[in-house]
Image 1 (cartoon, rainbow, N blue to C red):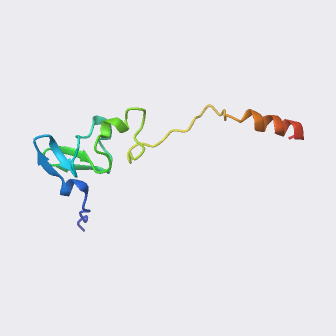
Image 2 (image 1 turned 30 degrees about the vertical axis):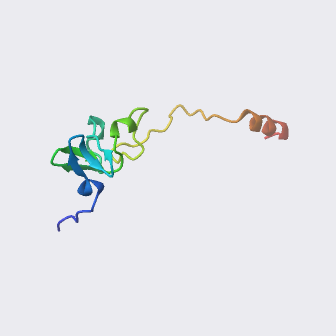
Length: 95
């Protein structure tokens, strides 16, 4: 059974001298870290993200929050930061 094509912003985007644009916003091609994500759509001029116009900025501080191919890692150190005020109140109550 063939997969249905969902309409995306890439379908309505227009190729101009500035690149692929949608509602006046220039879309930038995806970066290498985006490869494998379900939100990447191929266009004649390259691959683009259907969620963000500038995918490189989403990876600037770590993992993109909409990346479908990357899972967040939990802190395995076992240390949990506790609010010192709450900790002192618990200690006063004898917990």
